[in-house]
Length: 412
Image 1: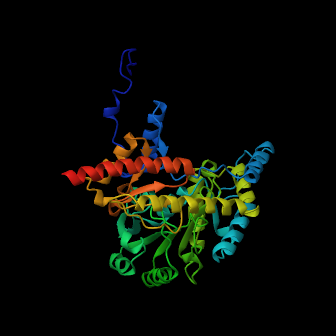
Image 2: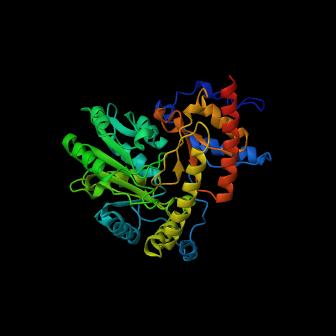
Image 3: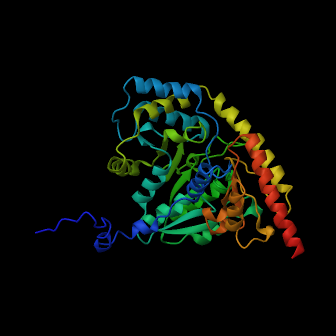
């Protein structure tokens, strides 16, 4: 007979006797940006004024015509299940958009619509990577790349991106890291946290290496419409590369739709069915009303994107100019996205996380570069996706902390 727990029994006391959880659950970490945001929000709840420069989220509202399309869809009852790869009308709109914006010609059948961009990373890695496989990732780079590779049992291999070269891909360094176990190469252009855009010559050289070594590529192009000079090119547009490239993009950054959770991947034909099956068994489908809003975003007027891009350009220039005027701080001009990655190693702190924690205590939230990989040590990431008045105040607080630290270093 099974004894019933007494009222005073600790309901968690039996947890220690349960069989251990899977090792993979311990291999996947959280994300520094969201952890810092949580701390900052907790401080705000306690009445502390915080300038948020840590999170990569546009401060603009979702454009009106996109919101209206979503509202109309909800009112029309578009709140039920839909096809796992996404509705055909949106997949057609995405295919047209990729052809017009980057010269990537892919049929709608190869588009899979997802709830945000991260599922494309996760499903690609799950579909391709097994224990013993190596995946080359940019470092510093988006933390989900390394996390998902480790979760799948693969081995992430860091490809250093150096500030002195504008965080460009070094082709010789890439060659050195390709082995017989390399399965996948991940690219991100424009990049997070670097703001760099991979040049056409480097893309051609990367394509040659991928063909030579029979590699898959995941090209993360979520910031594709946020550029300040020449628009970024896609490696998927290079002949023969569409057959081995998964192109990731979405609506969060370009259309200020972070909470709508709407992204997509353009997959090589052999991956479409297995990735669709992963989607079915994971999240079933992406909400129909969000997809209708996505159609409005791509088919509707694009002046909203241009206006946001120009606002970010002004903010970028302000941030880089102010940072470079601070003693011990050096910042390259980002070519895309909405991040600055200043080098603060000359400030002499034991590590940058100590300094960013100090900044948070003084009312401004930024991220240590090491949150994006070990080659990010010495840097900190600042998001300029916020209003100019907030940026100016945040920069003022950073400047005060830098000058205090600088004076301290001079007297010791």
